[in-house]
Image (tube, rainbow, N blue to C red; front, side, top):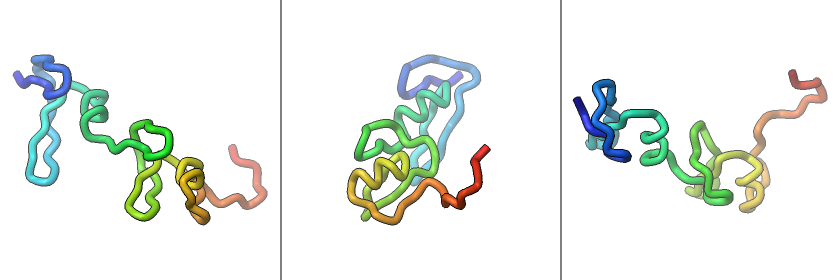
Length: 84
């Protein structure tokens, strides 16, 4: 069994994440996200997706990037069609 580096749970289904020459061990995606996901520089939430980048700073969405001064970042192109 392996021990989660975030919560300390000794779990038989723990998994490893290999990144930048370091191996991390987690027992859940929740713990992996809390340790590894970047934080939005506007609202402070964890970025669990692509995010938006402006001058080397990361944001969870286009709205937060615009609040920080981005002028051309959008979540999607608006075409006049109703989104479903």
